[in-house]
Length: 279
Image 1 (tube, rainbow, N blue to C red):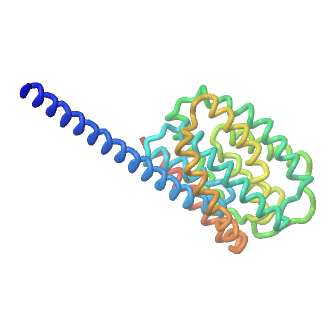
Image 2 (image 1 turned 90 degrees about the vertical axis):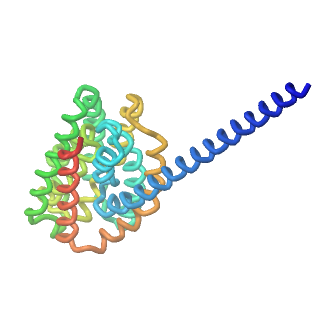
């Protein structure tokens, strides 16, 4: 009887230890998960501010960060960042619309062209090697940054409507690049609108947002269906981005066009270098 008692006591102690270890593991898991959520919400807030400032939804900064710092593949980075970009851009667009910076007749034509072409080009990401996509995006950003920095853009604001061929051309180019690089269309459309339509930097950014929102929504469906969206991180990023995107937008409206443009160029170049140098 004594032996049985000792065995029973030993068994009870063992079970208690197992339960204690299991409880500690669960607590540790909760802490780790919570810390990750806080990290991504904070990152989303910083990126959301930049997205509101430059009217790009923040994906320009989030994509290279997720790739270089968190080990995401380029495809996963783009798909995850697209959730945040869509949420941030939608909030920012409302602010620009209230400031009456949209020209509906011109903008809707460009948005329609961008959305249609973006649907087609987003299908191409399935066939592009991840490393090729990453380096191609990086090179694209650096070239565009040089063009934006040295261009005398965004310092006027023409009131005349944009010609139909120009509307269609800008919309098609924006859609093609957005499908491939998520924010590629937004990045190239801002300087194009400043040069071709002689829009101010702020009006160009407002127009681009109207193209970005529907194109991003369609692209998100494509990326998600292919399994390229990491939803836990994406939703945490989007939460933070929505919180600070309006502040970034108000800062953009208050800045001088040349300062805003050159700040934009610096961010583009930095993101491009990070992508090319990354693994």
